Length: 397
Image (tube, rainbow, N blue to C red):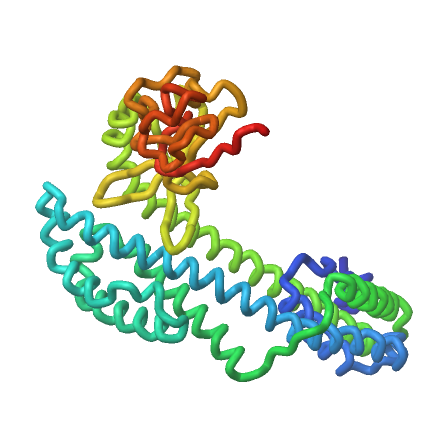
């Protein structure tokens, strides 16, 4: 509401400091400080001590932000490299898998692209900087065959690869510039102090308008508050825009993954003994050792499992391999004439279902495991358990 002098009856900063990243938080406070410090501090009822205390906190934030970036850079660059490797693997596998597609509209563009991607084979395992250079070369080559990549539904993947590679290179430049320091603590304890200093300054500015005795002073303070609100609004909008861009990128990635996985689900479900529509893609992915894995859900059981794409087919995988690797042996401490399945082994010295001969279960004369009679202690000469591993049983004294 305004009075007869066309001035508001009071002024108010519309919002506090919203949640920002550490860098944006410090930058926002710098902008606010520059606005306020440029005015007559006496008319704003601000002291040198208060302004200095606020500015000192801002400078500490800037210093801590720079100091933390080295550790954060390493983690961010590693994550970007993992993302880049996953996108490259998806790009390469999509092209190679569609080369054998019975659908002509997919097979022909894949055949034209396969020689190109083969020339970049293995770049995921290169030194990071060399990989960045080769990704740029790959993107330039793919841009010349945009119609073929679009036919295979790779436009979103290529766009994400370009963005990810650019972000990686930007972080690498920061590290080369030496602008980052290490060894200082987090800004989490400092940020609330900076905010409190601003809130005190803000309260003084709002009160100064009420006590101002001239229209010119009131107009100066009203304009200042309008500018403060504009800065706060601009930073809030930037934060929302950044979050929206990330959401769009995630949606594009999800759509691309569904285009790849959904057509493969009926064949996978049938081979696994489920109904054709019983298995669905949840949308979740996992990158392990430059291999992209996809989470599937079985509706009839409610269970989830992970799979990878191999030669144009979905293959179920274990997310936590057993400690035994490719084989293991199970030895029961008593009753050495039974296997791990509770059945007595056959007389040929082999455990049913196993793939090798086993030594005596209780210390016969032939521990070499050739399946022969181990002596009178165990006429069967068997070792419980099958598989490719081995086990040695020490007889009791």
